[in-house]
Length: 271
Image (cartoon, rainbow, N blue to C red):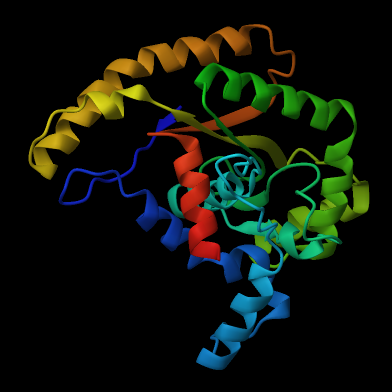
């Protein structure tokens, strides 16, 4: 369980727009593999690739009557958490493999891979991002998707994607990918992980007192940590009946005033 939260601005408001703008600043890295772009980029190349990356998103019509319910904001946020918090680089830029920009990603919400120095093996991460009003519903949906992912053999398809599209040249990861190519399934040197983002509405934002930002952050964290027992119980209840206990999980929790606020902010930054 990993508990994260939004920062507050000087007026005590959660910085949703700033998060969305930060994610927008990473759309080239998220959408386009290294093999399809120069490093470093010139300003002209960056502008061209940003335009190319923007075209890969759905850009839904977003109105009060028909709000955006796509998962793309959550998917890029999970990508950012995996790279910045866990330090696990994206191994396949799945966005550039979409045949129709209006389709959502098939299979997992991201494929990341790194060498675990301590355990001396490669960790392969499949992403699953859920933004729900209800935290329990988000957890249930995430585990159901992971169950289906394995039961339908999607992991085999994504193993093959790793062998065709990996972009990092770390010698240990390259050796592990070569093994995947040879055997078609993970060997003893590759460990399967699922990284889950659970974004949810939290009413406590509306109950926070008016106070200086530094004090407000401390108060928010105190309430968030007090609520962590409830989150743990939700998670444990669903894992009690989950059959694939041999898999490893990193679960990121992020409360929002509403997840719709975050989706709307990301679409605004994108557009």
